[in-house]
Length: 137
Image 1 (tube, rainbow, N blue to C red):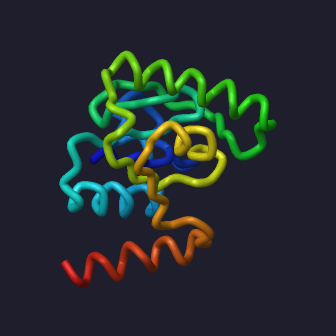
Image 2 (cartoon, helix red, strand yellow):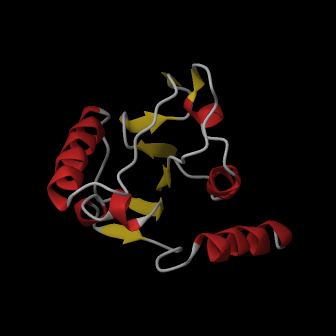
């Protein structure tokens, strides 16, 4: 199983590992949740860098896909697809997307077993989803 997390607006102000760059509560909770799923791999979907591993060293940035056109999101997804291929990802492996529609839309179609447990949930509901699962684990 592979889990995909989304980058967040709230970031560290200096270069660091990807897992430390994103400072928002939603990212921190999604990372803890993803780790409890015990996946083979966790990736972060970054508007600037595309596909990130948790320990990749990155610089702070201000970029999001939330205002991007469909064409721009498709181009970004194409870049991520190439990064996934380079990493030898098996697209028949189960993929869980803990990322918003703008980040997952084109990517989820690449996987034969893709799930989006947070689909349609507001940020508040997503935080609640993670909190409920923290309490039961």
